[in-house]
Every structure is written in structure tokens, then in C-alpha cells.
Amino acid sequence: MKRILVWFRSDLRVRDHAVLAAAVAEADEVIPFYCFDDHYYQQLPFGFSKTGAFRAQFIRESVADLRVQLQNLGGDLAIRKGATPQAIKAIHEEFPLDAIYHAQEVTHEERQIEEAVRGLEIPMQGFWNYSLYHLDELPVEVSKIPRVFTPFRKKMEKYSHVREEIPTPEEVEIPADFSWQELPKMEELGLETTDTDPRAVLDFKGGETEAWQRLNHYFWDQKHLQEYKKTRNGLVGADYSSKFSAWLSQGCISPVSIYHQIKKFEREVKKNSSTYWLYFELMWRDFFRFTALKQGEQFFKMPENHAPRYSKKHFEKWRLGETGQDFVDANMREILHTGFMSNRGRQNVASYLVKDLGQHWYTGAAWFESQLIDYDVCSNYGNWTYVAGVGNDPRENRWFNVEKQAERYDEDGSFRKLWLD
Ligand SMILES: Cc1cc2nc3c(=O)[nH]c(=O)nc-3n(C[C@H](O)[C@H](O)[C@H](O)COP(=O)(O)OP(=O)(O)OC[C@H]3O[C@@H](n4cnc5c(N)ncnc54)[C@H](O)[C@@H]3O)c2cc1C
Image (cartoon, rainbow, N blue to C red; front, side, top):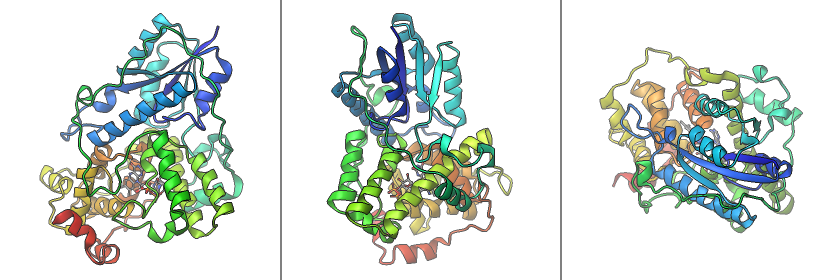
């Protein structure tokens, strides 16, 4: 009898899931497992939690939905809180495991947790499960991944291809008499539940079911995909961009699934520069993940062009939307009250913190990590170093003139009015 534990982390879905599919195919019994690891709920030295309330709530909803998806296949989900290695060890003592299958992570902290689990001496197998392009289909060696986005994109488009979706297992066999346990409450994660701000672009709800509802709304009901390139720099409302990021970040939907829906849309509705552009943006997401894989720990240690600075006064004003620069403040209040900010906003506030206030990019990245519903380790740290001009595309002169940007993208001032009045 072969029993495999499927360790879910930021891949909270059953569709197009390499790990689950392999485990179900190979094992007699599977234990799907998720741990609210204390590491992610610790307080940071800046005075806020590594995972803030918006994302924690989204994760709770995503985990609850994953349990339902697995139950629909005859399975269930073991939910634990604490340290992942200890939680797996306790399961292994009662229900001996032959193997642990998991999605392969690329970043330092995630790999450290993986290493600690490896210490249990249960055979482990990692699967590539997060990006649009599979690691095996990279046309170059990891060490030779281009440093800059455009050559990376061109290489991928020319020499690689996106694989098909992996079929969802028909049935998940689980052990009887197992203690699956309940979802931890927000208070148990050290956080308070927050209500949705009526000004929020969207009432984000976590889970695979919600991810597909959002996709069906954006692609099929409203056909917004065909105008994405024209609207994507918007600031107000649900539909100026896809808003897929939160579900992608927790893996409630895979980029591969989205890609095939884009192709279907191109066949059945329209193919234009907008449909291409969503795919183009998904390649940015891949670029940062593959760059993190290539750079290892260095990904987080990009040197400042100047000596690192941290002034609590400046940082707090920026964080709370009280700098006096109205476009920056409006954006910072949006993320403070909703856990979301547009891409245009993110570029501007990041540039402002680093280039105008002269603060270390790392402090801003830490606040985004805490606050964003869609926080993704590679996209967040990759974009921060990119905007700061110290990352993969180190152009020192990348600077956003926030006043001009406000005039251009918030011409009638409605975004600033929404957040500042
Ligand atoms: C300083 C900074 C920090 C950021 N932090 C994150 C983060 O933690 N998590 C995150 O998902 N994105 C991050 N982004 C990228 C981008 O702002 C968001 O992905 C986007 O705003 C999410 O909204 P959307 O899903 O409607 O995007 P859309 O415009 O609809 O794009 C579709 C998808 O493409 C991907 N994408 C788009 N732009 C980028 C980009 N620049 N880099 C990587 N992927 C991209 C996302 O997965 C997104 O969901 C950051 C950008 C900046 C400038």
C-alpha cells in the first residue's frame, strides 16, 4: 500500500495540478495537506505582520474552497497550523507516509521550509507547478536566462510552447478515520477580520470556484478581454484589468488554464492586440519566477545604488498615504484599506518611495508583502528591484514623474477624489 502526502502551498486548486495528478496516479491513498505555517504570520521588524488581514482572509477562503473541491472528488484536506515539518511529522507517526509530493518553490524562505521537511527523511518529489512555461521547456539553461525581459520573452515565444492542462483526477482516495481538522480563525493567525471597503475595485473572495467565476465574467460574459490593452492602465473599477493576480498568487487558477482560455477566446470571439497582451503580462510573471530561480538568495539582496536608508518618519507617511503628494497618497490609501493597488499605482508609489523619498526599496516591498491580497514573492520583489533600478534590468534613470502620471492616468481626478475626500 503506497501513501503519498500532497503538500499544498500556493497551488490551491485541483485543476491543472501536476502534484495532485501524479500522486493520485501513483498512490493507493493520498493525504492532501495544507499548513498555515507560523513563519508567514510573524511580526516584521517594521511593526506589521508578514501576512496581513486581507491576504490571510483570502487564503482562508481559498483553503476552504480547496477542501470542497477535494471532497467533490471523494477526498478531503488535512488543515494544520504551526510549523510545517512538525505537522507532517505528526501525521507520519499515525499514518506512515511513503512520499511527500509538492510544488517546487524557487525562493529562499520557501526552500528553507522545504529543507526542514526534508529533514524528516521521507522521500520527497518536487513538481513544477506555478508558471506558464514549464521549467523543462526553457530553451536555455537556467544560468543563461536573459537578464532583461524582452530577450526572455522573445526566446520563449520563439523556442518554447505552453503545455496542455493536466486532467483533474476523477477520484482522490484518502485514509479513513483521519483527523482533517478545521480552518484556523483569523484570531488564531493573530489577525482581525476586516470588512470590504465600498471603494474597493473588487470584493476579492479566495478559491478555485471564485477564480473561474472571475474569468468567466471577464472573458465570456462581458468580453472585456478584447479591450484589455486599452483599459489596463486604469485606476477605478473592477474591469479595467483582469484582477486575476490574487487567484494566480494562491494558485487557485493556473496560468496555463488562463492561456488556453485566451486561445479559445481568440478562436471563438476575437483575436487582437489585447488578447495577446494578457499573455504578454503572464510572461512578465514567468520572467520574475525564472529570474528568482536563477539568482537564488541574490534575488532579495540587490544592492542599492546609494547607501540603504530607512527613516521611520518618511516610511510611515508613505505607508499611511500622508506624504502630501496626492496621487501617491490616493494609491497608498487604496492598498491600506483594500489590499489592492493597480499596476500603474504600484509603479508610481514604488518609484516615489525610492527615488523621491530616498528610502530603501526593501521597506516598500515588505509593506506590499504584508498588505497585498495578490502578493507573490517573485512578482513583488522582482518588480520592486526593477522599479528601483537595481534588479534584473538595472536602469538607474527609471523614474516616474508622479505629477505627470496623475495628469495622464487620472485626468479628471476621480481616482484621487475617491481616496482623498
Ligand atoms: C512594485 C510592484 C509590486 C508588485 N507586486 C506584485 C505582487 O506581489 N503580485 C503580483 O501578482 N503582481 C505584482 N505586481 C505586478 C502587477 O502590478 C500586478 O500583477 C497587477 O497589478 C495585478 O492586477 P491584474 O491581475 O488586474 O493585472 P492584469 O493587468 O490583468 O495582468 C494579468 C496578469 O499578468 C501578471 N502581471 C501583470 N503585470 C505584471 C508584472 N509587472 N509583473 C508580474 N506579473 C504581472 C499578473 O499575474 C496579472 O494577474 C507588482 C508590480 C509592482 C510595480
